[in-house]
Image 1 (cartoon, helix red, strand yellow):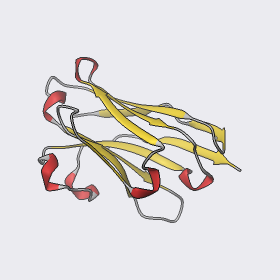
Image 2 (cartoon, helix red, strand yellow):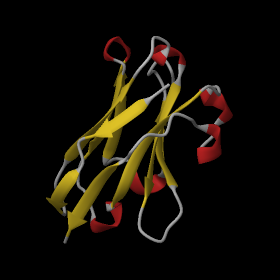
Image 3 (cartoon, one colour):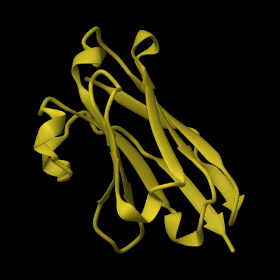
Length: 125
């Protein structure tokens, strides 16, 4: 699977952005999807994931209540709606796919594939 993330930008604290991740191929609906982010000098961090059907989601504690992950399998696209952004959300955001069952609760990047170029999110105070 090949993935392309977009929708990043520069916003002030409290602002919103919606990231999109478009997948190629006909099997998108069979993949769980995840978003990760990496700030300069830091390791890649799990942000959110969604099951293949879209019925289940999971978030890192720091974004719960502010970020919402959804998907449209007909459009081979996942969306990450980010509200109430904070300066600490500044990072390059990447989407990735996984073949592992959602119930396994994998948040390690090594369980994901299809990494493409990320999209930069910059939040100023």
